[in-house]
Image 1 (cartoon, helix red, strand yellow):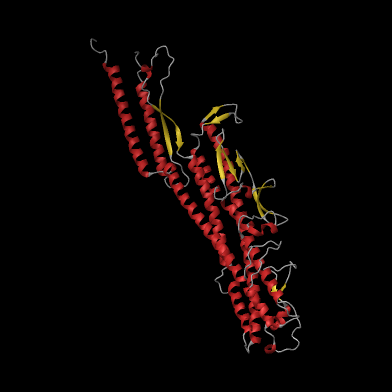
Image 2 (cartoon, rainbow, N blue to C red):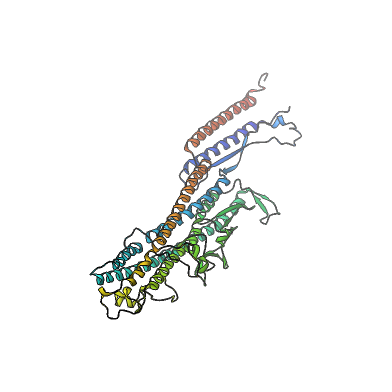
Length: 523
């Protein structure tokens, strides 16, 4: 065995001191960022220095063994599978939560318990009209009360229509704001990609390889870690708005897929916007140039933006008559607008057909469309307003008869509508429900359906929220900073540093013995 280089041990301990110091630096950095949002715990990777030599003087592994350690780089601790799973669940939480909030707003409008709403007024209308079937000296007053309740019913339906339109406008505004946020996030990621790429080059964490477009391959294990944290934090935010996936490119940049298409590649980002179909008025998410995101095909499967589309375009059984842009698989604002229109049309038509008065109908249309009643255009007819007793007249008309002389059989026909099974149809002729329902049954049916939708969204949200908390905790166990663990690391690295320093002293003393003490005998 040949004599190893005299200062090799000291050099090895010097590198060990550097490695221990760097590990302490990284530990301190972790402790400093314990409360920094999006920060990933960092670690200095240590490797043993390999014994490689082609020297004629040192030709065995033993001669150069024991060269200590070196820091290969500083990496961050993340689990990409957990990241992706968390983002998927986060998107689901945003979807169900936004749908739940919107449906609760609809429930507050269509509150069947509210005595001032349609259901409460309709019950009073039924009670008043039923009094015509009994001998009553106040029939004239009852007629006025009945007509007034009918006016309140029409006004309640108009209020529903107005308030549902307001929620729909609010959804549109929220969708437009969300899309602006998405564009901001995507542009920020693209800008960070540029800095990330330049950072790899400046750090020297690249391998020249002309088979790649950039001419090199980045070592994405290391590199600008803080920039990666910022990008990952932005991707987490992006997952609130829709389904998202990421992948790493050879040059170290992130490619981001959003809503079924590549939204960020290198330094380029797509520009999204909200627009409305010129034919049916449905809302859509587009990206330039004029490409629509096909949400129904799964391109936008979750997130707030999908919820806004479902709530704006969700028409349920009314989708076929509204247009191709509406969704028949979800019950959103369009569905409940269709429901109150069907209620107005079926109710007004049934009462008008039952009323045989020569003077006119009970209900009329105040505007477009003229071929059917809607919640917006239903009103009490001018003829009924002029003569509240109109519902007691027959085909021969009033003919000068006094109220107490009128034949009650005509008003009985009107009263029969209350308990009659009616066919609630869409405006294109299709049934909403195959079995006939009374007006009361229809109100209960729709109220129960709304309650079921709310309950479903709430249960889905709770499930996603529980999973999100679990996954967030699992992610934190990997990427989060533990003060207990960092404290233990600090003590370990400090002991390591002290031991290396003591070893340096021992080697220095050995050299001093060789240099100043060896070979002095006999001088």
